[in-house]
Picture 1 (tube, rainbow, N blue to C red):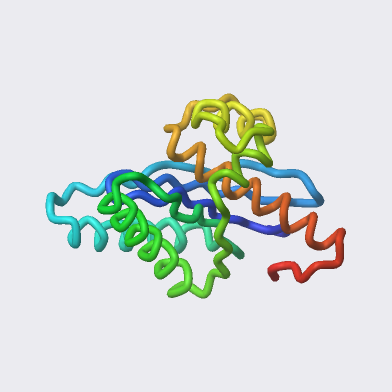
Picture 2: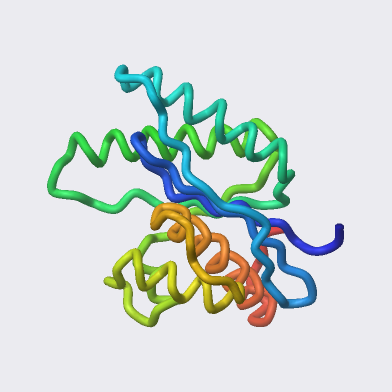
Length: 168
């Protein structure tokens, strides 16, 4: 199929959201989305499970590019470190499949979709549903991942219009 296929990822060690959109002639279409919830109790085992499951998503949809939310600073340093490790696993799964990865601050994703960098997950899902022309029945983590993918498509178009180096 023609167009650009983008995988959006909302990293998490207990729940990783993913969403795949295709942009064709400036129009975005939802391909699929979901969450990966590792079953293992041991953190390192969960990371391995995330890698394998995300690699299967990448193999199924063969995205051209990926957009991954950056780690936001939390009060709990341990949680931020675990989130960073889950993000690293997501990036590794993408780059192992030769998928170009771009990171986005959560506040930029929210602001580009909702108009506020402090928007709630439900607001992001609602706006993503409006943009994609579907009713959001997905988990909020999948909605955040789709938001990241939509933001990437918009930022990519903006970079092209302004003459900045666009991801290819």
